Image (cartoon, rainbow, N blue to C red):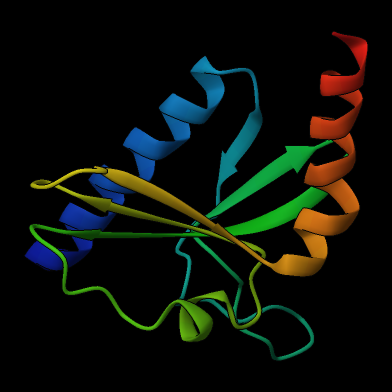
Length: 117
């Protein structure tokens, strides 16, 4: 039986997954993230896999009651995007993305949208 922390983590991963699907993304849950090793001997990366513009991005979800989150750089190591979600305080959710991905994927989409107006 999974620990209380693992169950809580899975619950919040599913909440983020459903939110991302609601706003139009294709997302899948990484089965047993962090506890399986692939055929190359590497741990599966991230809790979720997000499809954006035909590319797969590895997502890590971290939940805390307040604000004691791990270092964002450590969380992004080997991953592309992190969601930090907390119960109290504003904002409730922060999205942290690798700068290279922001520059190559996100910024062009934002600029394209802005230039259409």
